[in-house]
Length: 255
Ligand SMILES: O=P(O)(O)OC[C@H]1O[C@H](O[C@H]2O[C@H](CO)[C@@H](O)[C@H](O)[C@H]2O)[C@H](O)[C@@H](O)[C@@H]1O
Image (cartoon, rainbow, N blue to C red; front, side):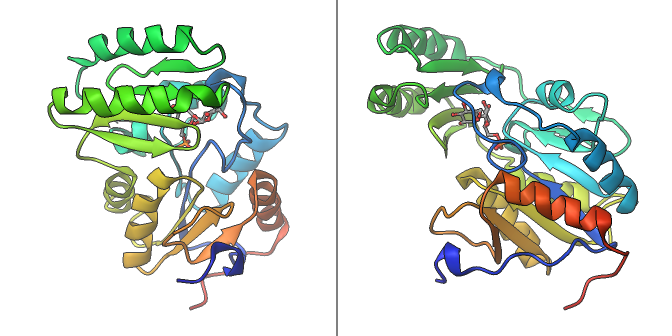
């Protein structure tokens, strides 16, 4: 496998692409807490312009909830998948609601007790999923991983989703790849070349789908191993790449 740092930069965005973008670590720099992220000035306008440029075929595919994505990128409401694909808003604004929460309440309370012992660590309640974060206190990593491992057998049809400074308990089934595949079955994405840009482990599911459909998978950073075909170094490089497209003349994909 080619080391990620040897992967080429992606070509300029083409008019016939269906472009899917991850959020944290891709469009936005990481922050100490989920609420601490900053949306760079001009990014919302840039995304709106890109959406027009692509005939509407621009979507967000994130681990965050759709409601959070709408808050972050207001007033823009792009076609989007939230909760790693569990929650989906189609181009017609219809939202598929996730499975309601059940046994997660107990885990949530236990996790709150753990993070009380490790200031800076936190529990993110996403209704049908719970994310256990240690970015603010790395000493919490092992206790939170242990708690997630111990809880998993009790949560029917749930699985662990590892991420950057986080482990999440989420319903099994739909992932980011499934969400991208579903969006690609409908207008305005259908018939276009799929391209997905993401940084984290959860994004590998999306990479698999776009590559299987003749598209491009763009890794942000140097996480390894990866299925990605192309790479950008950091969110600032993603923004520069999006900007370059806004300035470039229109063109279609080459092989
Ligand atoms: O799929 P993404 O859009 O990349 O979302 C993945 C998770 O992002 C958020 O957590 C991550 O970013 C936080 C803010 O920078 C950071 O504090 C945390 O350590 C990261 O794991 C979000 O809070 C999660 O719900 C998403 O699943």
